[in-house]
Length: 420
Image (cartoon, rainbow, N blue to C red; front, side):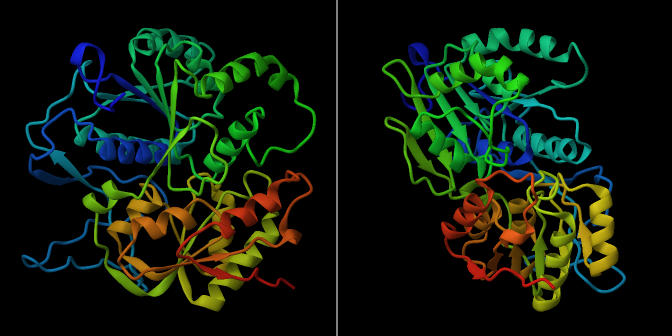
């Protein structure tokens, strides 16, 4: 079925479920590729500043406008280092709010983490500016919240022609899949987890996140097993159901019948940049410590040594990195900690950004080269030394992280930092 074709010639009703800013970004990329619009896409943009900036280090004043046709001035902190300007929204003139018949409705299953919520709100604003309908659900706002959320979504789920999801491992999403009658299911990137999802689907395995420790399922896993099994069946193509994976990640094991569509970040490149590029290096943070994969002390040593070796001055924190860890990083490395208000692909595309971006194995080693194509920015990835892993790390962790680096295109590979 064509992305825009629905019943009796009407546009298809598409319902997208997202739980993170990156998922919402990739829904916008998917919709852009397939030409979904709820308002006139040719209407001229009218930029206006976002009224608030999320709390945390790295918040900056608006970028002052320069002469017509000139690049904007780059604000700097007291030490002269460039900082990240706040989001400038693109508003579709005369767009208004799309109604229930919008081609795409994005349902945000809101998490509780403040940084994730802040980025999601700003991404939701961008989705509205593109003319899509956004429905914010406090899906985790108390004991009864899941019942209210699922009850309220039951009708739209049954009417939807297509379901788009950012996290097929999510128990919330798996539960919602048991309600829908949609013939078309789309999985958009949720980072490196997409690689594992496709591989597990191809091998007919149960859906388990790669960083989960191996072994026997726990009580909650056993209780939820029938729902998870049902979701896996629904995500397997059949004569009654089509499945698409929209990804910028390498897909080496394609399940039979699954359509794989490449995400080249065309929407991001069209809406943002090109960025102002500085002479220095920037570093991208990771939540591998928070997920229990990498030891915190070893990670701090690696960041310090990598920053010193390459002259990095800024550290773009992952939204899940905790404040205590970031405070320690700032104190012991001298790096300026930046808490982005949008996914890093958009932050880097807006600029200013370093000529070299340093990263450990993560999603950005695949996405940043695409978002920054043609800018001359180099992405360099540092391998994770097996000695950095914790005792609780999954047996698959080292191989998976190595695979993330091995399959990355257009990146410079750095050897693991040798720690004392």
